[in-house]
Length: 138
Image 1 (cartoon, rainbow, N blue to C red):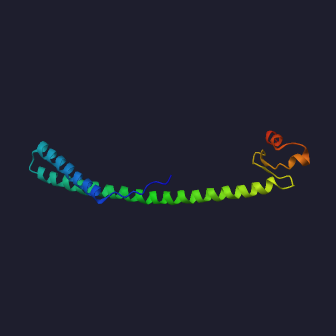
Image 2 (image 1 turned 135 degrees about the vertical axis):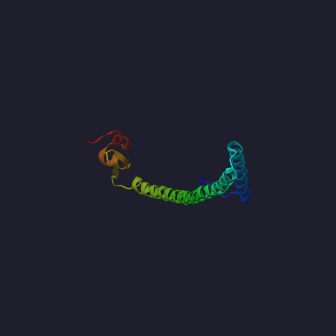
Image 3 (image 1 turned 135 degrees about the horizontal axis):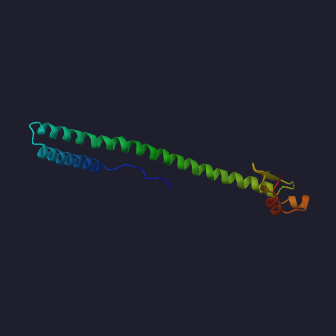
């Protein structure tokens, strides 16, 4: 399944910025109320600036890479689908050739088990392909 493209509308970006301003104001007011020092206004301004700038920047730094990765994943998924379809077509073609060949064709895996045995093995050896699948070679 191809992931959907991540592209939030501008209204959601603005909503995040507005919410970050509200949170910053609330934190600043809370700090100002709790400290009651002459420098409390500076703390209020510092927290407001920090939160107002930090949250949208974090959003942009997290959102942008995710959208890039989702595009890459989408492209890789399409390439994988095309490759799988090509592999299936090639396998069908070679299996068709091997099934109707008069020669005895077989493929073995790394562990020396039979992966494919052509039906012509029965006319040559007297054993069916299923017999070869059940046999292990040592």
